[in-house]
Each structure stands twice: as C-alpha cells, then as structure tokens.
Image 1: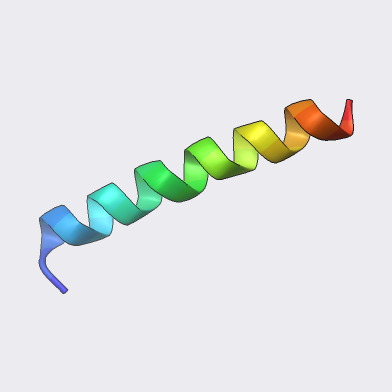
Image 2: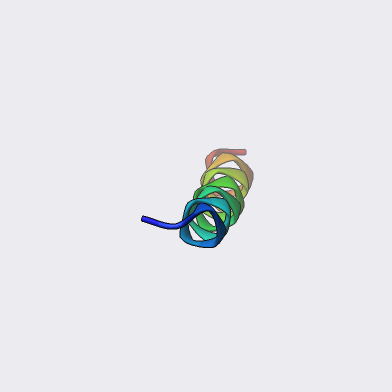
Length: 25
C-alpha cells in the first residue's frame, strides 16, 4: 500500500469510529 492509501484508510476508519460512538450514545 502507498502512504496515501494508508492515510485514506485511517480517515475512513476514524469516520466509522466516530459514527459508531454517536450511534451508541
């Protein structure tokens, strides 16, 4: 994977994590 792909993956996971936390609340 390239560094850009890794950064995009981190952003995607971060957004998913935020959405999951909001749903749990």
